[in-house]
Structures are given as C-alpha cells and as structure tokens.
Length: 442
Image (cartoon, rainbow, N blue to C red; front, side):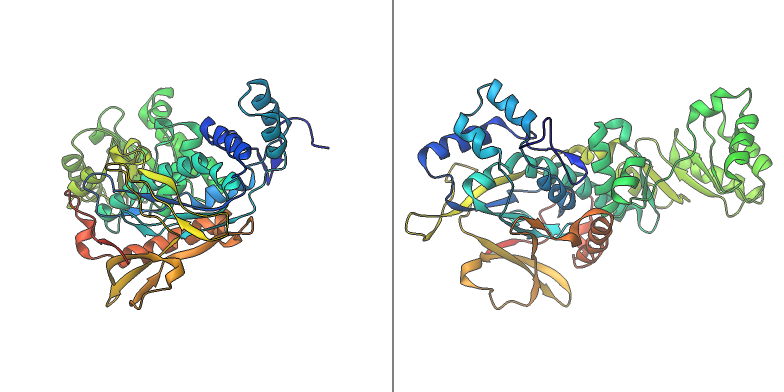
C-alpha cells in the first residue's frame, strides 16, 4: 500500500512533476500504441555554444542523479494527474510503479564540452527515459550555463580567488545550484549557506551596508564586527567615505586587519588609492576585495589593479548573459520489432540531429586537446590518441556514488581543473570566437 501524500526518497520529496505535460501525454499515447517498452537511447547535447564562447563546462550531473532517484509518483502526484485528466487510468497505474531502472552514461561533471558533445546518454524503455527529458535539461542547461560563465571569470581572475554572491539575483533553489556550479568551475566560496550544507561548498560572508547604518557611527559598527569576529574579518568601507573608512578600519582593527571590501565607484582607481593608503598605515598584509556588478570583462580589466579577491553576483547566476546552455534531449536510436537497433534523427532545417548510440574521445597532442571525436559506439573506438570521455553515471537504475553529494561535487571541481588544463591557450580569450576544439563525427 502506498503511503499517502507526496512520497519522500533519499531525504527529498518526489521530483516527478518537475516535468512538461507532453512527456506524460507521449507516455500515455505510447502505452496505447504498445511502443512504450521499446528499448531506446536518448542523448543530451548542445547544437552550439553561446555566441562567441570557446568552450563549455558540464555541471549539474550530481544534482540530476539525486533528483532522478526521487523521480517517483506518490499519491499526491497521481491524484493530481488523475483529477486533471492529464493521462489515462492505465497510465496512472503504470506511473505508480515508476522507478528509472535503465543506464545513464555521459561526460563527467566538470568536463569541458563542445557542440555535439554527447553530454548525457540515457538508455531504457521509451516510457522510462522520455519522462526524464525536462528534469535533465532544466538541471544541465542552467548549471552548465553558470559553470561555463564562471570558468571564464576564473580564467580572467588568474590566481586571485572569487566568491559567488548571487543568491539574491535568482530563484531560491537556483541560488543553491548556481553556487555549486560556480564552485565546480573554480570559484573558492559562496555566500549561500544551503550550498554549504547540501554540497560542501565553502561559505563566506561578514556584513552589508545595513550593519554600518544600524550603528550610531561607522567606528562603532567596525568595532562591533571586530569584537564579534576578530581583526581578521573583512570590513566594508564604502558606506560613506572610503578614505575615512579605511583610516577608521585600521584604527579599530590595527594593522593586522584581514581585508576591506569595496562595492562601488571606479574600482580600478579606488583600489589603487586604498592599497597605497593601507600600506601607509602599516596594514601591508590587509587584502582588498571588490564586488559591484562584476563580470568576466570587469574582472579582466582589473587584472593590473592590486585586487586580492572578487565577489560576483548577478553575472554568474545568469550565465553572464546566457542563462541556459542550449542543450536538447533527443531520441537517437531504438530497437525495432525484430530486436535490431535503428538509428533515428531529425532532418528539420537548422535542427538536424545525428542518429545512433554514440561515444566520444578528446584527441590530444602533447597533452593539448585538438579534436572532439564522436563515433558510433557499436563500431568501436577509433585508433586515435586521446582521452575517453564517456563514464558510467547510472547502472541498472543505481547512481554511481562517486558523482554524488559533497564528494561528487569536489571530484567535479578537481576534474574541471584537469580538463581545462588540456585546452589550448586560445580557449581563454574573452573576445568572440569559434569553439577552440572542433567536433568531428567518425
């Protein structure tokens, strides 16, 4: 007997209705035609990168695997579907026992991808696999967009650390996802506390302007913060007058003050002035962090300024102008009535696809990537020197634990660093250009 209400799995609530209705109606019609059990292969890929980008970063895989585990239909979900006549009673009965039992392979989280890269390959019956389309795309499109933008910011920052501070510029659940994606892409910390709890992302944060305005004087506010957190804290110095605030900050905290933060003005000029002022006050080790609507271009423009770290908000959680990675979920193969595999593909203008169950490798020369080679898995790996890109993510319905939770997030971050290190130097230019590695179908 099913428990009443929305069913909880693996510490969460059912994700089964995080879908588009046409997935359910396709299932309903396929059950009617008797084709719903046909073994199928679906593939997630991007036809192109956001305009001018040289490469993308896969992110969201670990989140997606956890959400698929929770993709079950409890009484609340089934009652909603039945009450609104979305699917037939036969399909309601089929959904009551739904649990994805197929296989998912694809690129590791943190991997670099290019147009046509088979980022995710879902194998199972049509009925099982088609239901995952929206969930897979909503996760991978957003998280990969954030990670791809964040990676550009990391490159622009060089060795200087970046903190993700965009929670107030996106949805409350997207804020957690974006913090995780930015961390995978190389950001060092986030202001979002839930991202720390759920995914092990280091958290940071001290005070906003309201804390200074709460007190009767700026000096009183600084003293309260120092009393609470010690002189290693970061003091926000642009509420009133930056020069006076820096003097006060060093007066209150002493020359061992950890950092000052600047959130407004001409940052390049402001930072140079503050650095000279701190040095003159003996606070030579006090760091300067800047915020204020930064993106990869603003970060690059500050490369010669004495900035020690950056805080980035709106631009990272919106993919720096491209909030979705443009990935699609397409059927590429199915078995026919004789049990033979048949490649299928769209021929639509500007939306044509390449059929067949594919695999991929990245061809390398002296450790540097030069070609994304995509081939039909049934034909075997071509004799090309390079790194195989497809790994097991879910086998017979069970997610590989390596990609889950805190450990999976850290593994994705580490892999991103290794994958990006294989790219040629031209990958890191901020001007518009073609993908740095061409995709070749073999």
